[in-house]
Length: 189
Image (cartoon, helix red, strand yellow):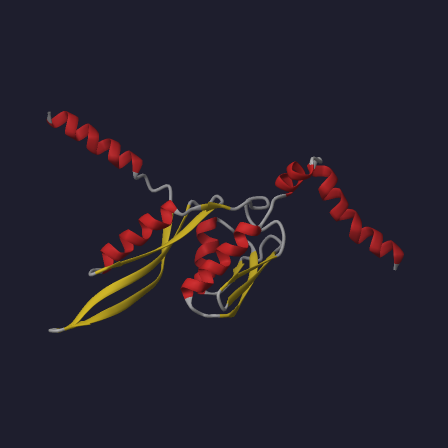
């Protein structure tokens, strides 16, 4: 009987292998005023990713900080999205993202640039596995809105493979047209 419980425990440990990295972005103390005074709680914002093209965020509230972080991490793992990356290090094209009053601009960058981004956006890129990106946050500085705007933009990103498949063409046809356009403009000038 003890062996069976032990095996079950090992299986649970195997399921929770640290395949995902997580980053605590914000922790907020919230209070509720009740008849006897105030009750304090904590709200946590966490970004989770596998650093290979999947990322998600979650928020959790609880009376204690570790419990709020745990709830946020669980929610983030359930809400993960896959983002295609160019060469596993940067974005395929420039994108904008919006959520509420928050707007973010994300641009692809050459190798060696690094992550040029502010707080919450940097956490998303690091958990996603992006190595080179230039980004700017415009409008809302609220970390919740910045993360939502970043994920909104990242979900709009399309890889050349998905575009080619949708249009019924070869990837080489799509990429060659994009590369020929600057050459044709240079020849005209």
